[in-house]
Length: 424
Ligand code: GDP
Ligand code: IMO
Ligand code: MG
Image (cartoon, rainbow, N blue to C red; front, top):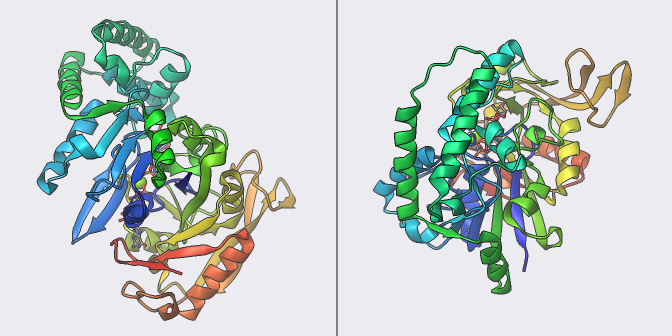
């Protein structure tokens, strides 16, 4: 028995949280494999919207086990808030949520370093979520990090002090204006650490997953961010600091590549991006504004407006290939209702040459996206419950995408609610 993965194929916010929640009934374990509280995964059911940052999106299903893998970075303060938000829903997370001992901790000074680094970059800033993600992964690969498992040993606070002192020196190195009260931040941090030590189960998660596979349990790996934010294959340096692609599930959970079965690649019917960095199909006109408005395109973690643009099949072809996607899931088709003519990017003109692959640089000065046009649809599709009910133009849009990507579109989402999900 292996595991399936669900991951974003664009710049994040594709709707991963919604679909993991929808699929959880088919799985025993939902395992997050990378990222941290930079993620904001939205779920909606029974008229209530939930936003999760670190907790896997299977948490609302009483029979599912949820696991935060070793590839995830955890901010105890944000984690505690998330857990407390669950209290009113009577979720027994001390049983249904397991945390890898090898997951790294985000310290208050990691957040400060993130802010200092962004300030020092000025208008070249990454536009990070300021959650300390980059500095925490830097300490992980620099072999200085503190892990969840360290909290079970008495000397972790001296490790903490040593690292936090070093961070303070680094912060002053940036020579930026940053005011903070580390004592206050630390008292919240230590209180949150005590909370999670008290409430949660820490496990050797790679062994838990190996045993689960031997027991024929069904496992779904939940990605965060999207493939175009991958540290290796994304639009570097405007990326996050982890491998958001399928390979990240192997390192972030400790599962072997040959155990991966289905890879569900999720994408919006258009494209969005939050933060800085190139975006070839970005719209700066009233169509872009309409998509942003109808799609409520504001970051689930930071509230920042998301940049919107046409669907980019050159980029999607690349991310389908990198991830070995076996099934596609198209989200937010409903948002495109009422746009007369839809454009899809199928080629780039890159430094004067027509190309069909994702080149080294997506910078505006080198890329001119080439589009095909398709007829749009006017119908409100948010109440459709079967594929046949959808307008013929939308079905043609889907057929074009799956032919181009040589991968079937198995799911079309027509609204944020669990129920607004059409399987084919
Ligand atoms: P994630 O980070 O991939 O989990 O995605 P986010 O939660 O950050 O962003 C997706 C947003 O789109 C959320 O506000 C969802 O509630 C919403 N959403 C998901 N699917 C659909 C859909 O099919 N139609 C519409 N209109 N909204 C959707
Ligand atoms: P989910 O899981 C969209 C973006 C940030 C910034 C860049 C680096 O909800 O899809 P970081 O804080 O990771 O150092 O920021 O990555 N980013 C996301 N964009 N969705 C996310 O997560 C993101 N997580 C990070 O905006 O451009
Ligand atoms: Mg999100």
